Image 1 (cartoon, rainbow, N blue to C red):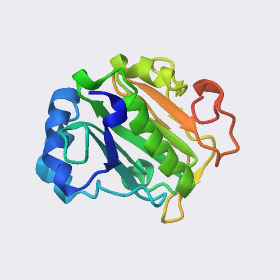
Image 2: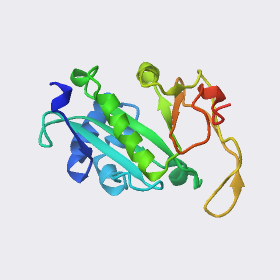
Image 3: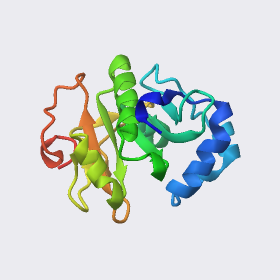
Image 4: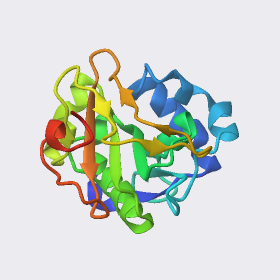
Length: 199
């Protein structure tokens, strides 16, 4: 079970049942990810090749035929959920089986998404962390918001219909936002509350 023998690659339809099963045990509150049919019918298997898309990767023990022991799913949620034309990806879910943790596997999955984001011009990666995962994001050097701190857009942004809006987002109960700027942004990577995205 050494990390150097792991297979990390893009997820696809063949991974659906194992991703859903891992979600049930490791992401129990994210019930939409427990639904096998939901994985098959929603466009969650992007290759991370465009800003307005998604990137889902799997981690398998030993080889591409080994058991699935982790996955990550990121997408342009601001576009999908709010019709906002911003170059951001939301890391919606990261899960690694308990027996395979603490060996850099979660970091490897996050790194894969970061590399894909850099290639296509994403400016910001963000998400919400449950309390038990805050130390993970901090260990990666990501900016983590204070408890209750909201995510705000620094200026008005355009919806695809041309409407200009300035939005604010509250974290879920007990959750905290995390974020990381890419090299495609002019904003400094300082503390979350000083990053110009969370104020």
